[in-house]
Length: 133
Image (cartoon, rainbow, N blue to C red):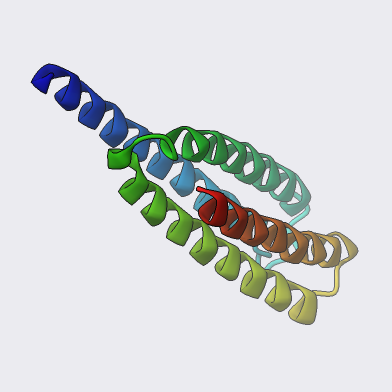
């Protein structure tokens, strides 16, 4: 019984650590989609890579978060992850607003709108999971 508890705790901690790595990937993606100050032609490719990394990291984070909603030990980690999700969504929304207001390149304006929409979806999902979980 004690060994099973230790293994469950190790699994919970490892899932939380992996999820934090995906959060770092989401933050890197968010920093990559933030506009650069120069008129660099490679920024469009960086924008696509940033969106891809952020979406893939977010998807894996959500899958891990769904796994963590099972079990008593994981519920505390799940609460921390839901707070991180909401903070990420708020930062992404503010970033999207700044991109829309201060950058006038078409792909940046589209990216700003997508950032705001994606942050709304992430925030609604976080609220839904916390309410049901």
